[in-house]
Amino acid sequence: MNKNCSKCETKLNYQTCRKNIETCMKCRPEKFCITCNKKISGGSRIGRCRKCNAIENNAFKGKKHKLETIEKLKNKIVSEETRKKMSDNHADVSGKNNPMYDKSIKEIWTEKFDNEKATKMWEDFKETNKFFHGEFSEERRKKISDRLKGDKNPAKRAETRQKLSVSMTNRILNGEKCGCTSAIGSYFNSKKCKNKNVIYCRSNLEKKIIEELEDDDDVIEFLWESMFIAYVDSDGHKRRYIPDAIIKFQNKTVMIEIKPERFLVYKNVQEKIKCAKAYCSQQNIQFECWRNYKTENIV
Picture 1 (tube, rainbow, N blue to C red):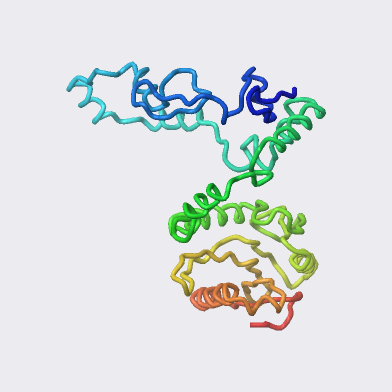
Picture 2: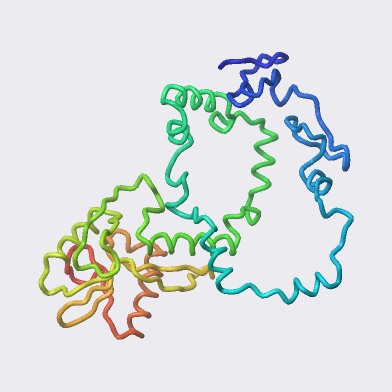
């Protein structure tokens, strides 16, 4: 389904063609809300912005609760049985329960339509979507840059960093693959690991050490990525460190971090090791950093 704008001859995207709209967004006349006179998108057919439309269609508009009803609402107690019903009826779409989990737009379209149609839609999407080609004016680029520069960047706010840290920690503790999805990783079925039957190994070195833990008769059991240690780094940011494993040998218990020696020069790795040593000292267990199985402690 290929169409061009009737005014400027720009190629229209798939969704626009489906709606039988003849012009692109730039060529459509501007529309304003009939209530607040705010500019609204060209595709709006109701004549009002979302906020004014919600107010206009509110069945409670111009009405008030009676005093008796207000008192009842204040004193309303929801029973545990009702809470459980509400909880059971609420669909859990977090993590792997999300239908779009670990899927691209093209994969979703392929499931919904046949492969040929999905491929055609994807090619049209790429061709008409400016984000694929960076077709922004210098003025537009500057506005985006200024809006997200320095402390204005949401990713640099303390509360955002904390939310990301908590989310990433929970995913790792649940055994999910996260972080760089292109990284080399593999899964290992473990018999001695007490908190996970299937372990996600983030490197070949981790997999090799887990295999040797399984074969070593001196190892009774171990926990893999089972906890986190909260600490504050040198810049004052709150962070969470997840040790690779806690191993119970016949005569001792050891917390280990698996790292090639070349990574020990990095500041964030040094801070993690420092907080791990402090924690192990309090728990009266050993801490070791391994580059090979049962190697001499390299920190």
